Image 1 (cartoon, rainbow, N blue to C red):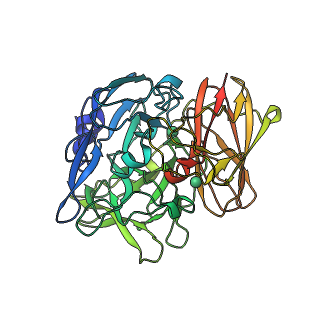
Image 2: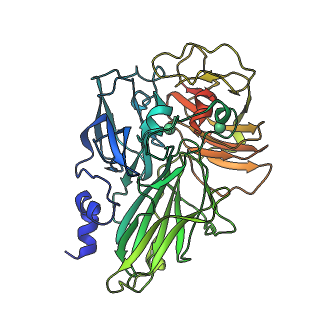
Image 3: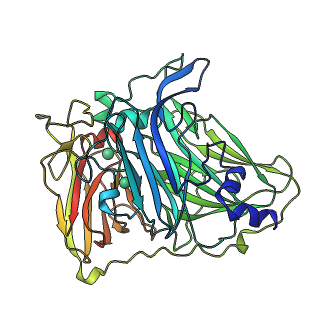
Length: 460
Ligand code: C2O
Ligand code: CU
Ligand code: CU
């Protein structure tokens, strides 16, 4: 077996092929995930009170394969409640992990077994949907890789989970949110990490083809990113293969990656020992910052991006726009009012946001009914109107959609689960309501989600 075939033949080998020091379980399609408190060295003192799936490392990359069943038992050892959501995956509603909407929150020492068969290949992720602010801000976000059934031609893969932490000089956590932040763009972290490291460098064979899977799992930050080596291309967005060539982001025209969003790049590693491809972020008021680097090692493998075939399409039904009913959703402020009972999943203590004037705080626990009821199998256009000056990555569970048009910009033809709404933007998206159930629909800036910008769509 050639090295490349070996690397592609099994998860364990992929772990060795540069998953960035992330803990890795070779049989991740059937395992127990123990939600626990952890500590980690970001600064001189270990940061206590982190939340992960092991005592001292980031949540692992979970591997599955398109069309093959997965069985993930989540056990909660925290004293707070939790639940786990599999972001972007079109799975059964009762496995979606949204407290009160699809399951009850898990108390201390309770477990829940999530069983599903991923219908789509691509880059997805997991995070809690109860005590969401606290647990995500303290570390509990991980990547899920759902492999295509066949080899798609890369020599190796690199997973990068971008996110901030909010720490003081000693490494102790600062409060994850502020009232001021929640009412505006959110509260930003001050330690930017890739896989919990500051500027990790990952070795890949010179001249080889690397699939770079990038996730923004931050609770707030919209990353502005580019790669320094031009020899790369965007091959998938929010899990799904792109159907048209997207321009490569540059320092002047960076890629906007909102919380919850993923992008896959095909990267042709430069020739020459030690040559690097840098993933660079533009952070407000700071010089450009390299978040992570890929470094070439060894003799050139002399491969070329043109050797790659387009990724196989996922089985996504496209909407019939001539017969689509239109529903409008307005994302805006709300007068501060009485907070509804938030149940067991934590409240930030205030409401600032609403969808269609209805604030829904907490983690989808409320007596508020669905924002809309969609008929199973029918096509719909959802008109998303941002009435606020802030940006909102609007995420829909359980279904995927195609962005159709915007009042402000050209939209690339994508299949996605999260639409980043710009200031004053109105975007229409189209979808087929082909997965029955109650599907959470919210902003992925967690402070917005938790202070009113949440609701759900019902598909029956
Ligand atoms: Cu990442 Cu409700 O989702
Ligand atoms: Cu989701
Ligand atoms: Cu928002």
